[in-house]
Length: 266
Image 1 (cartoon, helix red, strand yellow):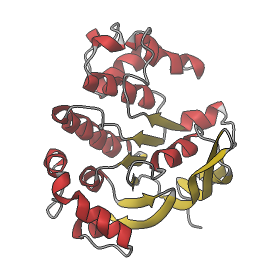
Image 2 (cartoon, rainbow, N blue to C red; image 1 turned 90 degrees about the vertical axis):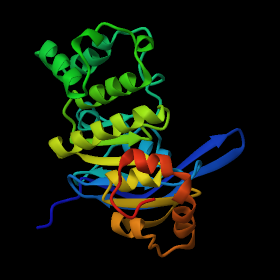
Image 3 (cartoon, one colour; image 1 turned 180 degrees about the vertical axis):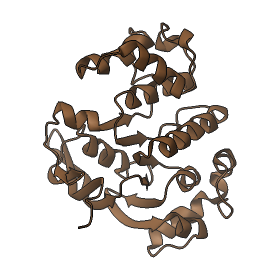
């Protein structure tokens, strides 16, 4: 019997209303992510890639279709156990951390919500796992650099030992010099923990460095899914995918050098 995929997105649609306007942000998107796989979603701004990620996490309501995690259909209102299974890292590390809470409080809160003991050890371990010193523990987010704040956000996501990690452009708001550190951290974490990961980005060089397969989105629709080798060779079936790959060359030279992708990505 074949094991169920870690994540199955089934005919997912997300619709928002603004006054009398009805905005279809995502339309009938389907894909599967195997256990332990790192799956990328790329596209231009407004393509719906982040909305798909939020719908998987239960942060955006699906108007049609659904999401299965390890074979189980997720409820519209996620249970505590479902929320613990899957964790999310947002694009803006400052906006996602409570400005009036210390790092200790930010990391302690999910442990309290889920009734976990030995919190001191878990907090210190979480900080060490993302390369932060214990002295950062009682500082506030504004007292940390952007890279340090994103490390805290990653530590908070990992402290509950989830099996699924959703990353929404986690380096795009950081200085180029800091991006490599965070990408290397994410790469190391996914290897050592065998996490199933979905990584959303507009940067094809970074996605090619981290992911095994890449979904390309346009205007709320899934255009195609490419193995990373096909992306590196510029081999795509759809015109839009080929145009996106061609446009990325040269435009992402700095990011490509930063991520140190395999030969062939420029």
